[in-house]
Image 1 (cartoon, rainbow over the protein chains, first blue to last red):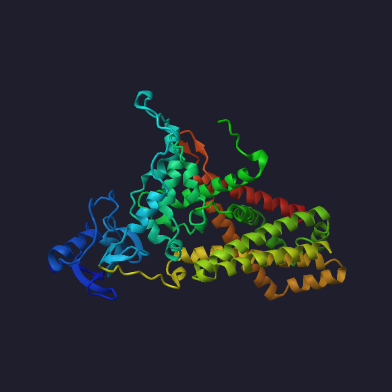
Image 2: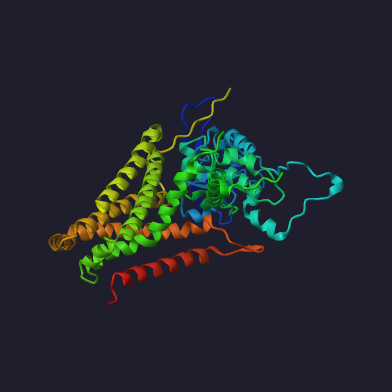
Length: 251
Length: 110
Length: 128
């Protein structure tokens, strides 16, 4: 019996040799339990060892194997070959990011933005160890939990046309994480984050295309985080300008 | 990095969006289909619209909807790849909204 | 020093995916609604004499105006549906450790819209 195969058209770019990228076709075994990442591993092990791509956990946790599979941003460990019919399946690096080599993109821009929104608990004054832990109720945890599931896979950036057009845009995942910490009852850093979040490069760049939420493998809903931040920032804007709405400063 | 003044436009945009979502389909049904089919009398609509408070309400509703449309169209044009004309587009869009508000107040109140 | 390849965005990206096409139509719906308002206020202010009213009704009964209102109605419904559909993304109602499911928020919007629409047509005498 002849084994069934499927064609993968893989984006290739070698920074020292190529001016322009090209596509290379590979014929790989079609196995119903294979994902695109298995097919790429097969190519690297059996056909062409120079193919470069990132991967680690193979189970949708590490967030490193994001690629464009037939034009959609996907974790390649979660994109089953059987869902693409008889193929061919086109595999490209994540959209909008510069390509280091083959399917590997440059992460620097995202990493810098992530740091800028301070994705950690900010305290005006740290409690001493003797004062005990910062307590939080399950209801308080529930407020931000969905936004805390992000694995930094950057699929949302590839799905976001605004990020493609305006590279300065802070972008979906970073803004969702900003909202995650802003909603955390233990955090006091919202005002610091707002300088960037509520700037013209933050939430106001977003036109609510909504595809960031659609492609998120962890159901983080960055579009929702950004909308909620828009509502909250709009209320801030009015409170800061209308005297009787202004928050009382008791300290 | 400074906080943006976008909230002023965004709040009108949102208000206009809400108003349009709730009120516009039924208004279109009235003037576009029910009135020409004589299910409602256009004369009665015109009469109701001639009351000052209705005029004021319609004017406010229209103003919000114009800003809503201008705001969306502004970003549609930018998203379509005209980022280099961002400022011009902004002025043209909000300018048109102001023009439409002016026209509406003029036909309703003169 | 290796040079990264800069990926270009297609000029017609908004045609490339059904979700992007729907997004563009949704955004353009605002312009159609704005045009409708200009027509609405023009009719309401100009048709104040019996002759003008008759003339206005006669033109509303022509195919181009039916088409106009038909197209605008489709876009305005697109606006309503997408607006209500996205409302739960902006509105979060916490219920202890849970939150009110989005379908209730969207549903409440539809109930409100139907109630408003029925009130408006009743106000203009459709049921009398």
